[in-house]
Image (cartoon, rainbow, N blue to C red; front, side):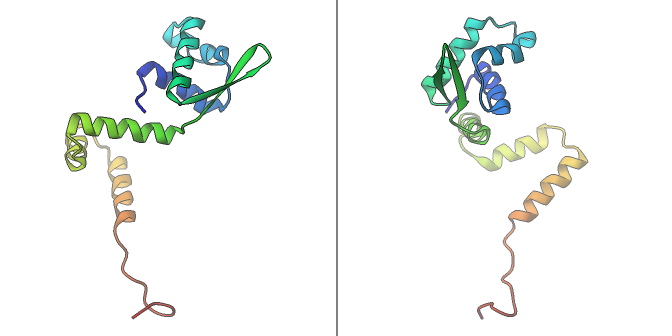
Length: 131
């Protein structure tokens, strides 16, 4: 699912709060976006149409909650970027990120830790291990 920048802004509020009404989103983003209430309502309606949000009527208001997780949206966004900008070549993408972006020593250590966790582990020996 492809989200616009404005839709990401709305979804970030929804993911933080779990359930919201349009006024909640407006209050959370109004200072930095300058959006009107109608803009927020339009964005939330589009997100419902895309299947990212679901809304249910409660009295005179509609309460929204996420259908997709932040992680699902991130995965989709990264996959889209990978396909569009790097022809799906994950290695080229990683190489670009490592050479073009500043990598702090803390980031480097975290990356090394994650890679070590992915490495196949040798089979366990001893009791219960097959030979």
